[in-house]
Length: 228
Image 1: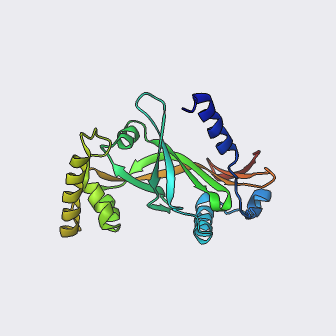
Image 2 (image 1 turned 45 degrees about the horizontal axis):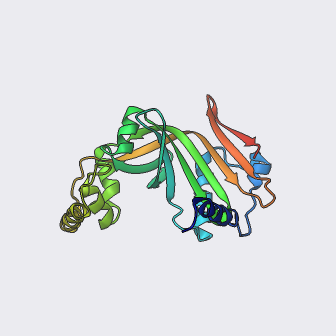
Image 3 (image 1 turned 90 degrees about the vertical axis):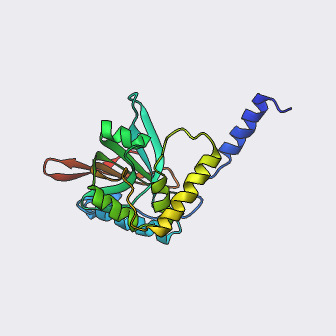
């Protein structure tokens, strides 16, 4: 039997053998001269998202959502971006879920995008508000049948007694989603993060990483370069 020490060394060797950004990385001229960057972060986010898609980045619309847990500590999970517009960055979940309850108690969050295909990261943080239920439903109904079926199950974060219970609920939800494409999902909620800070990170093969931070001030957005 392999000893714990040997297992640990095998893991460590495997971990350290992994390459970082084994690809040609794009330039980020705006981080060399912030005057070249848009006046606010949204246009740059739209541009980088399009470039990530063009570069073949898998699931560029997924992001990490960090919230404050009930005990005051951090909590994080991966969710999907539903939109990014003048109101903020949009995502959705059940208000009754763990993250829904956390956001109700403390409506602040941070988002993180990592696009390895170009060595890029984007961090956004700010206050979170909820959209009206009609808007939340419209967003849900514009998505796939599977998205509606998942929302109709509506027991996110509850303790599951068995896989069979999940299977039965899922089958029933799929049947209803197909029969009622406009079905209501009472706890399904669209959230909007209004940013107070957004950072764009461009990796560099020589570790001269470029970081451009937007910070919302009293007179609009302030652009700042950060040391790596």
